[in-house]
Image (cartoon, rainbow, N blue to C red; front, side, top):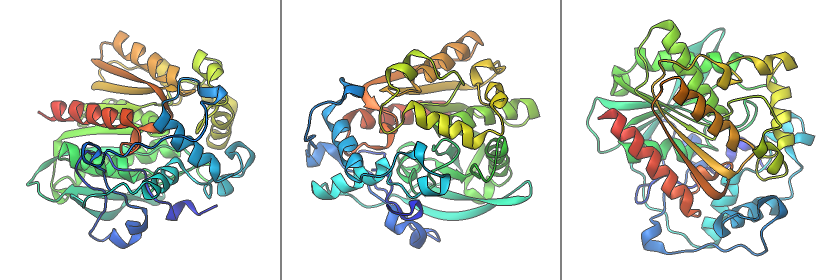
Length: 373
């Protein structure tokens, strides 16, 4: 097992743009960068070695190839580990990068510069990575991005391709936030850090070459929960609201007996037992699971910005996204929701291998560009 801080990040976000960085963070993430593959040019199809698993009979071949590679590392199940041990496990991004190398998929050059910045939060500092398109003049729209990992694992490197791809395809500054994680930092630390980072972006937009009136939120999984909470907190604080939010398979409620939790209880790379493990690590007691910051479907959702929700079929969190979309629509929020069949949790950053990821990324970018117009 490798330390998560040195992991290679998921394959990039755009069709023809890249995912290697430069600037003051170049050395830090050089080993974790990947580039976006031009799938229309390289025509490489990655095939699985075996049949579809019982937990995902509808899985697409390319998605299965990634899951097979992930299984080949033979890591211990996260739900059986401590948080420190779990952070050393391989990630789906490792599997994607290994498949890229094994199949000789070419990777074009980077189209962004990156720099690291520290952000003051209550009693501490957190880190952010700023992605700026190389060829763009400013001030640019700005996206505040929150990575996944159940509030416990993963980091900026593991989700580098999503953040960098957003910057390249949307033509926006992206601020990727390394909020503090559990169990060292319990609920609501990550939520408070996420909002503090949003406020910092608004106050420091000029130095970021960004327009604070054109801001959006994006988050994956736990990060999707954080992104939506930031919009709610901005509304309550009566500060600049984001123009749009993109929530990719967000954690949105606490009932682990929904249809998708039961149907995909043994799915990979996320299963029902792992979600229980994440919850136990982040929350101080079971009652906190009902807090509307965790159970977003019970929150006051009125007045939130137009929202794009992306879900995966083979995912315990599939119904979380569907339920949140319904609740947002009932609250008068403009909703676009797209579900991708045959793919699993974490598929979003796998565009060089999984065609559905390429489509999902283009869809998210289109939604954001339209909002910024």
